Image (tube, rainbow, N blue to C red; front, side):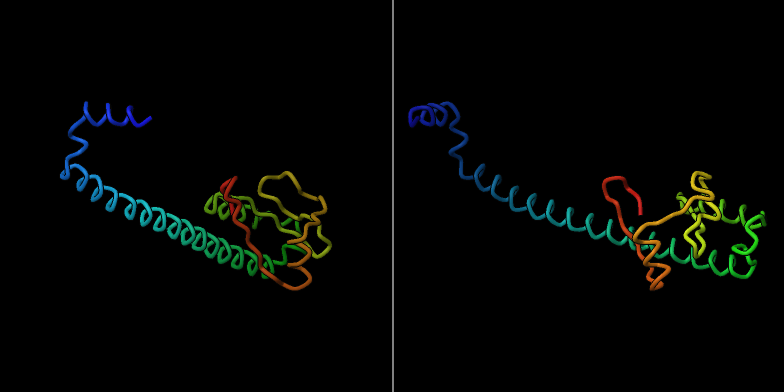
Amino acid sequence: MNSIYTNIFKNFRFLKSLKLRIFILLLLMGIVPAVAVGATVMLNYEKRAVFEKTVESTNYCRALANHIEEVGFLSNPNETSLDDELSLVSEILSGRIMVIDSDYVVVSDTYSLANGKIMISKEVIDCFNSGVNESHNDEENKYI
């Protein structure tokens, strides 16, 4: 084993150069921190972007909830004036909006998949019982 290294160093004498060793050391001292700082910046940027998207979505949904209450959409779900607004906000947020009444029935779904169905999930029940707003970032599927 020792002879292999000896042969390599004999054939590659420039590896013994102090200048090369100093260059490699300085290169490593510059690259490692740069990669660490870059990774930290990207992680913080991603967290901040998710937070901002969550706040934006929450604000849009609060405004929609206020408008739904003003119009009385839950007492008269056949009112079509709100459907366009729901679709518009859904497109702006690039997501799905479901309006669920206190009986857990989906009154309106922008994907039209769950209209009239009962929506029982932990998040929906917690929201009705305690008024807790909840958000979850699914990093694997890239949605909030």
